[in-house]
Length: 544
Image (tube, rainbow, N blue to C red; front, top):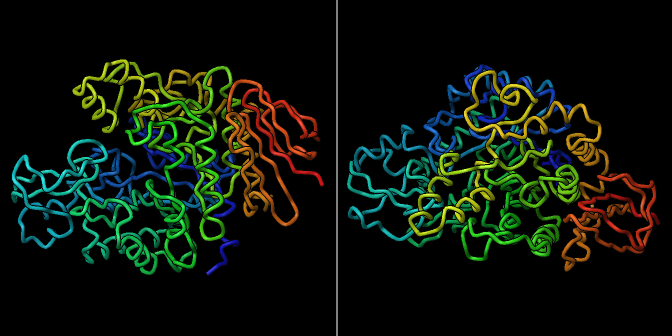
């Protein structure tokens, strides 16, 4: 096995594709696999090495594909298995690797396993899922589903409850059953043999749950299961693996990603994505960002993983709103703040993830009312909070800020029909700002957000200090400045970012040679006292 420092994914950058909203090749309004193929040139131009593709398996789409009905098939709306094989081959031609999204905590209730499991109590597939006795209206315990309501659903066919930690159409698999695990390993090896080079594993920290004890994340057998998965599937392959472990903290993060433990390469933690909600409340209970909280979380993960783990770096994905609207400024300073946020993230230690449209500064959608939302979580939240007496204004404020639908509007390719996403009618709203914000315009403008991301990606490939350098957070209590250093074999870089639209002062006892900035700069700067303009970001090498 390669040494941790030599792993290819350490200086790579991942680009996440939400296929339904990326590019439609056949005019039916739904993005598809051939649409992805048609844009590989664009991804190569950007410079990314890996594309993470959200689920493309057959699915009833109760949760936009995260309710899988066939793990080894391709949904007709996205194309065919032959299309997928062609994409794999074409990615190889572009030297781009594919990371598949695996949903192994649960299936669709329309998966053949569950159709069998619910038919009779003595069916061979019964134990593939988690069943408990109970009377109608009296579930086994008070576990709540992540999308709201009870996590237990009564099944009339056999008079028992099944567990679903998400939608009722997403019954949880029983990982205690060795047969379930063997089916999953078989499926993973199928995709590996087809040429897949990585896996992103949905809600991986939940698969070891003990529902009777209300242990949902980080259950006692979790790491045993992951080590078994490593042995039986990707362990001896040169792949990239990342587990979605939203409730993790660094001590647990090291368990997942310490190479000596033979589990995963890295995990997604959501700790930094929760700093603008009220403690102990739901994501919908908003508070203003306190930059000190964000720095505390990032600094903790950067320092505490050390050489015993690896960070995933992200601002956006299909489950979170657009970062330029959330923590940047999607008005007058959209380009400056988008570049600043990119600088702050890509300068840290870890593998950066770019979500489609982030590289051109796509923004949240201007939702007007209940009928604008598509996502099951948003729809459930609207209904529940209405019943709880929240005002329409309060509900819409939270949804506009945090709805997952913000990330799922179609990619804005040009200023033409449906933003160039489809020749037909798009399956979901096109953001009305597509005439000003689109990829075609970004490619033509040498000062665009796209070209700034391109430079950040190039730096990660060319400069070992960005990959391996030790991280030190500076001025942790400053409420405006996000600054840190990276140091590696005698080279020291300073990354300093003004997170707000006001002038800010920063001091560092040295001179710096500017590597990259989102403003015009002199080649060399005295850092003894500098005034940072709104959303200004600078990467410079400290001069000795």
